[in-house]
Length: 144
Image 1: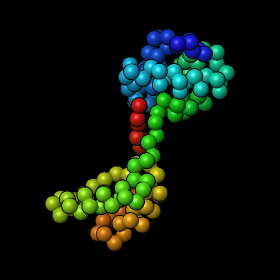
Image 2 (image 1 turned 90 degrees about the vertical axis):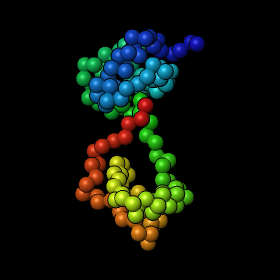
Image 3 (image 1 turned 180 degrees about the horizontal axis):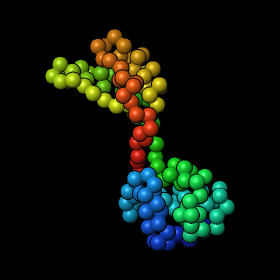
């Protein structure tokens, strides 16, 4: 397959090391095509002519490119609990186990939206909202 940019096995290994070192994400060898397609967009946007040039810039510490690099390689899944029936299923499950043991949970991102949805669906069902003071908003789920 002809590609716009040369992407060697060494380039892929460099990407794997960089994303692991800076975000704790371990990319499997099966992700090579995904990495190429996502980072090729960054090369076009940044004007770099090769993966080697782009990766060298990151390795030198280009602070402005780190966030786009990490965002390009992560998938931010947002479909969980987006629809009302998700809350119905969760409510039934939690009620079934609530009498047996305490329920603890952590909401990592989008707490305001989730709290509003929680209020709307479970206000009168005996479930309590999470304590916002205990939620670490800096934690980000990582998917790769």
